[in-house]
Image (cartoon, rainbow over all chains, first blue to last red; front, side, top):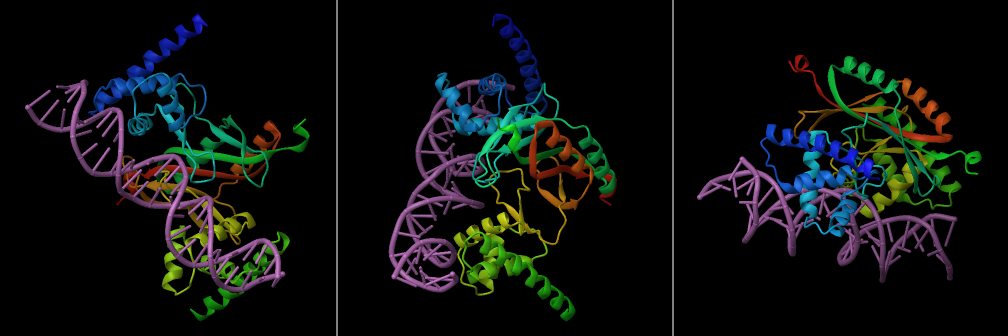
Length: 163
Length: 163
DNA sequence: CTCAATGCAAATCATTTGCACACCC
DNA sequence: GGGTGTGCAAATGATTTGCATTGAG
């Protein structure tokens, strides 16, 4: 446990330095809130939404508002420190986020419990290199520079897998 | 113009028959609203959102409510008569839809005017068969049956393409 | 007739905005 | 000090819901 903490702290320092440089280069201020929120996000192992993060920080007695979290997340997105996802096909549901700095780009397989109400059973991450080939083909075909992509597969578990 | 209209009408008949069967098989009623909304959607050549469709129908003096459009669209989605998209990365923006019955599945390249405010300049449809290979790989790797996918590329036009 | 479907208006809820105060630069 | 960033509360806007009425089966 102690070992793990040391490791986490050192990556946290890197991340905070990335943020520091980003803020500097873009004329934003070095507010403590931004670092605190970044720390909390990088301690999370799973996807989270703004409300999750807000509740966690309130429980930890931080004085923070959702508005600030929303603002800050926007900065982190632009800085490439986190990624945004919309897993549920319902538009009314909230966006999910995940730390992204040490990860390689990956895509998601959304497994529904069944095909009728589309309740999510599990979200699996995967990484298929063929997507790069498609990306390059599209870049050449349409004369664009592609900066990001999102790929989701939606399905259900095969019946012989349930037991 | 006249020719085109004849062609449209005959495909409309097919589509309406598809709806009729879907409603029958699923115990839903044959309301005139459902057919009217379907006709309007299949006369649209581009992506639309609920508000677009509502305004078009109001202009054409139809007596229809947004609630009914939302309900009906849900049915059409399930029937495979339309597809839903969320082009803007802003969650607060509305969902887009498009007729799907005569199309082959395709994906989208979202071209931003620039990388800062992410205003959409154009949305291009494409169809790369390699996505099928990825899909099958994922199905086998995780023992799932994939029913749909969504793939978006986001980018900007290359500078030498603007003039 | 009965109950699903409609239109209307009010409710919801994630996100955004306005504003007064705080504090980074 | 000046203006950006914050917390708070109110506003927004797409979608959903409640309910009385309508009309399909």
